[in-house]
Image 1 (cartoon, rainbow, N blue to C red):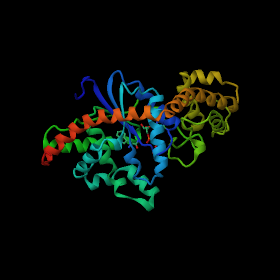
Image 2: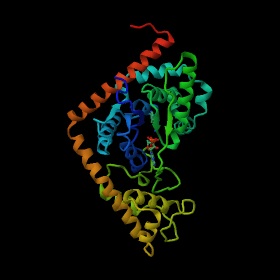
Image 3: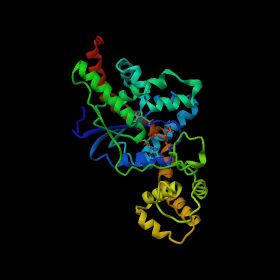
Image 4: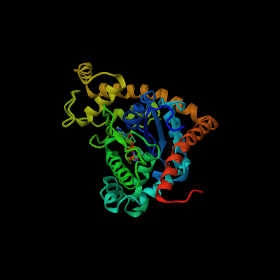
Length: 335
Ligand code: ATP
Ligand code: LTN
């Protein structure tokens, strides 16, 4: 039954375009886990989106499977949340095509992500990269989602999704729920350890700036030891003047639930060496149970398959209903 719980619905997703980072966890997945009681949550692995940039097939498979396990290890209970792989639900591609025909060239040309990614991949500015927001709109609208948790960089894509939904509804009546973006209150934006003015990103080429969720403790500690700071030798929060130290404070704060004043007091009179080591240790302890649980889940491929198959089935039921309505509205004959 559609939305049998009558809870408001949430949909979000992450592309398995790289190994998940500390940023993916603190900025997204950790917050998702807390929503399951209040909302009917659908979390997708956006594998179809990843091929807008060339992928190595075996790597994509490995990352997708690992990401399913990591979602669960981060606290997304597959009984309470619908976890699925986008390509397992054909309705995404099907509605994606329909929405391509209700999305304007001019709108897509204005998307900053398209401008950025096409500038970075000049040898592969493909049509998928351009129409990506229409597929993302399909991802959301298929589930009649009320809220879409995303980071600030995806807000523009939720806006265009709203525009597409409103345009379609304007022609055919109320087919789609017009969703709202849901930007987490504690806007943890974790920056790169090596260049703290840019976001920690799973597709960043500079691996030293990035802490991966499943990384070995010794590698994590090494990266924190090398983290860029400044020459003041004082642990103090000042995002503008001290972006490196402020980022480390932010990370330490979410790991230990301590506020900035308490952290400043804790490290008053200490050098950055002690501080960076403490942050590294805190992150290691935060990630340890997640890494262990992910490894445990990955060791039983059949159990993992049962989980994503069940998720795909549940997702397909909801998505199929919306797609059926859309096909009827645009004039396709019922098979
Ligand atoms: P890519 O490098 O492939 O663009 P990314 O690592 O920047 O990926 P996304 O897949 O775009 O991450 O983001 C997935 C989710 O995780 C989003 O909700 C995003 O806001 C959040 N997120 C990713 N990186 C960070 C970060 N460094 N700090 C806070 N949140 C983050
Ligand atoms: N474009 C998003 C991933 C994504 C998504 C979605 C997020 C694909 N489909 C639907 C929310 C809802 C990204 O690159 N972070």
